[in-house]
Amino acid sequence: MMEKEKILQKIEEIGVLAVLRGPSPDLTIKMVAALIEGGVTGIEITYSTPNAAGVVRSLDQEFGSEILLGMGTLIVPGQVEEAVDAGAKFLVSPHTEESLASTMAGCGLPIMMGALTPSEVMQARAYGSDVVKVFPGSLGGPAYMKALKGPFPDIPMMPTGGVNENNLGDWFSAGAFAVGAGSNLCPKELALAGEFGKITAIAKSFIAAVQAARLES
Image 1 (cartoon, rainbow, N blue to C red):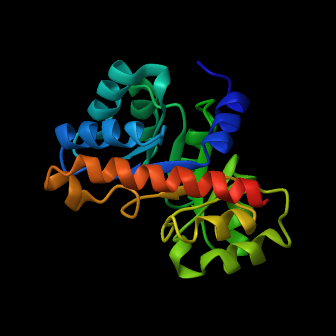
Image 2 (cartoon, one colour; image 1 turned 45 degrees about the vertical axis):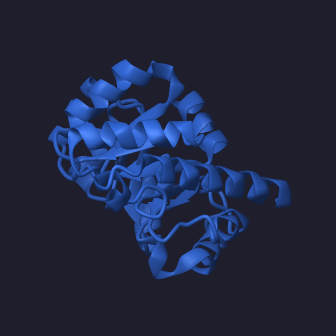
């Protein structure tokens, strides 16, 4: 298993995690293949995807070290062991809750817990969150996360929700460690329509936006 620090470094290098709520196991795997073709290699399969753990197993077997694969939308402690067994390299929850947090923190993988307010950010960090997932990012936008970074400059933050290729630079300017992007990066509608080439094109534009943001910083 990649050491925690190396995985965190890899997430920061990749810059963007595709947060997938796939409509079916088969389509989710095709969505990931389309994202990889577009250069997006950070993949988070959410528990709202049908047979999520099975999908992660299949992706791990098919793509291996080509991708950095994690699981998200963990709600209950029992999902932690299942995600680790399936091959997840990082874990993400939409919220911060003590029993889930302690199980996540005990698994040895990088963990990201969801928080929005200053108190929640501090609580997530106190419970062992390596990176705090600012969620929903769409609520306050980059300006809000920049305000959070004021008192907490040393807490790595990953906004998720409301991230698109047009505002991606603003998120990095505001101090994002990385960003999580869901429907703006990989629309379920395109997968259902079989338009995987369009998903690849969007992935390419996201990667170009990450590179442009880094050149500016």
